Image (tube, rainbow, N blue to C red; front, side, top):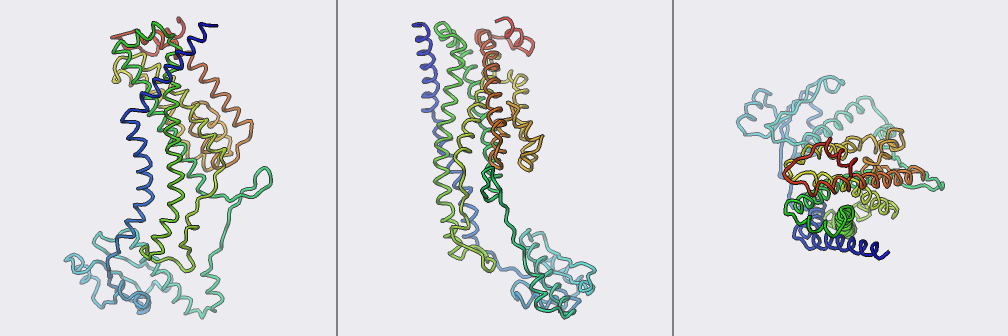
Length: 431
């Protein structure tokens, strides 16, 4: 009994050392601060740049064979469009010389539903310009063709009308909830965060093991602590560090989302953003964030923690089997593939989260940390799938930590020799 208490106390000390040492490190402090800063910049800078950058005045010449379309374009915007009688060949020469920025050639058969309008430019017209010109020409041609048919105003209104649609999800309780693409995006973000964490924190544990192994510190530690407890202490300490960092980021992200909407609305109300459609809303409500079920956040933490424990035990085993990071590439490859494979299925799973493929893949313990949060953000997961996956992940971790501890027990005392897969399996069986 006393021995068990002593061992638990040593385990706690290892966890405490791993956690506090890395918590105070410059890398942890810098990355923890930089993430919210980058998030703020990604939210604010696009709007700020659009606000501060006024669109320069542009003008495109219109060579119109119909005698109607060009006039309509000029009537709508006499600064953007200007009619010309110069022939297309002459306009081409002027464009090459740089005296004009671009020109349109409108054939006469365009009003009969044939031919096509051609827009020539010197490579300075981006997607916004070409999209606007296409839309302007299409509207004018449509109106002229409707005029020729003496189309009643009521029919014109029907053609111009846009059908409003709304997506609602009926939950198991029978309530209706808004179905927003925001939740799909949320699932993607969660998946990529866990993906990055598996690589980042897994590499931290692997390097930590290699550093202690090469410095021979581990020999002193192993004389008083069992390798299994040493491995568990490392994995648990770094896992708590990751949760701490995510908690800080989550708090910062919540604050950023609360202020992002009003700030964007303020920029829009200032009139700096380009013209809005009639009736478009510019208040903060247009940028409101849908409410997120707290269970999604809890599940995210749970799957992050379980996924971290699974992969960290594997990375620790790799670190104990080699002396240099360059020697670990071959052993890391299967682990890296297990992390990358679920990324290949992010789109299929998010597009049809209830399909058999999505259910099976999200329940595979190695894929679940990334794919299950994506499904949970989009739909309600059946009880048996959720907790069945959690149970499978726990069992997988128990098996892997047992195997990794056996590799760790032998590997941390091996120097100058790079172990292969066959030798690792030998260590697992013989220890």
